Amino acid sequence: MIVGFAETFKALSDPVRREILVLLKDGKLSAGEIAGCFEMTQATVSYHLSKLKQADLIFENKYKNYIYYEINTSVFEEVMLWLSQFGGFKDET
Image (cartoon, rainbow, N blue to C red; front, side, top):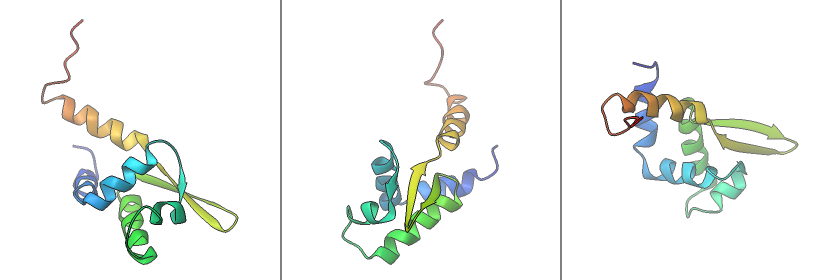
């Protein structure tokens, strides 16, 4: 089992964090752009971003006065590889 799976799945268990990941699937966004998509405080959005970062699901990049976030695809690839052992993803060749 990959180190950090428990933290990864715990981070993914929250619907707000899953929605943040959906927003980031098309490319990086600033913290403000992400917060603008939710009806919650900036502090609450920052908390969710922090949890995603702790689980290595997102990267944080600072540029001037802004922080941008993007998906860490390698973690998703590891999860999919691990899940594939349970079937449903068989190669038909």
